[in-house]
Image (cartoon, rainbow, N blue to C red; front, top):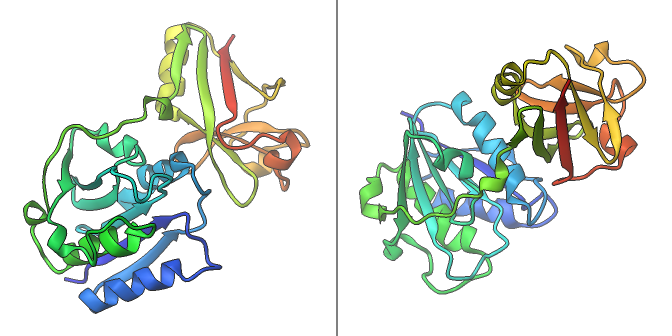
Length: 264
């Protein structure tokens, strides 16, 4: 069976980083096929990578290995995780980037401690090349996860990745991803949104972002008029969008911008 490695990183296309990761994979397992899922993620902001792995993992073939690297702490003593989730494997730094996967009951977490599988076990500023990619490649060769790491339960989870219900009528959220069209994607899922709406007893909601109040809700981007509006994206989260324009540029709201949702 063909084995796949999916890359989710902040390495971009300008440098050699992605190319050398593919070289390491090909050297260890020439039969593995690499899929570039997203390599232009914002640097130093793991929440965008968290969003990408959470919303896209189920679209891939069974046994796909995901390499998720947005790693501000590269070279420090933070560990490397190998997570088995459902039919998949994920290799990533232990910095909270896998928070939405780690919160799922189906996940089983190991800390990678079989350092003889690394290209180098010395501290490095490129641990994706020297440590994480070799682990991912050996998984595609059929190496049992138990030979790569030990069961682990002291991993980092970022509770701030998720929205919170401040009261029966208010949700506190934030922007976790901005796509190329300028859509501002929040961490508020459809389920969280409507479950709390039911509890509130109200039938309408509005968003406040950057001191601007948004009440319009559309089914598709084409339904939007000239102002920012709310929409449930294909990923299942609430986003702030504009028809053929950029909500990001219009509102001047970036990643991690606070979002207040109010039922009324």
